[in-house]
Length: 55
Image (cartoon, helix red, strand yellow):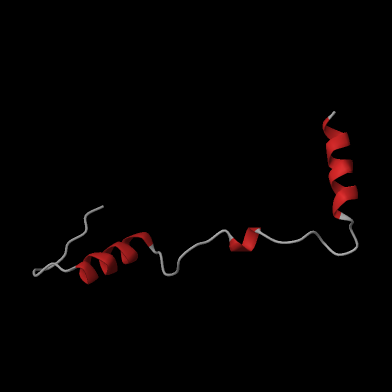
């Protein structure tokens, strides 16, 4: 892929060209993957159940 930036080259132009090339419009985070277990499940009981499945 070739990215062509007209002179004068500035930081803003470079960032804009890279954003267009990668299609990145917003910053991706892991926030959506963090959270609590569904309600009604006891955390300690869930851990014991999962650990029992391992061994």
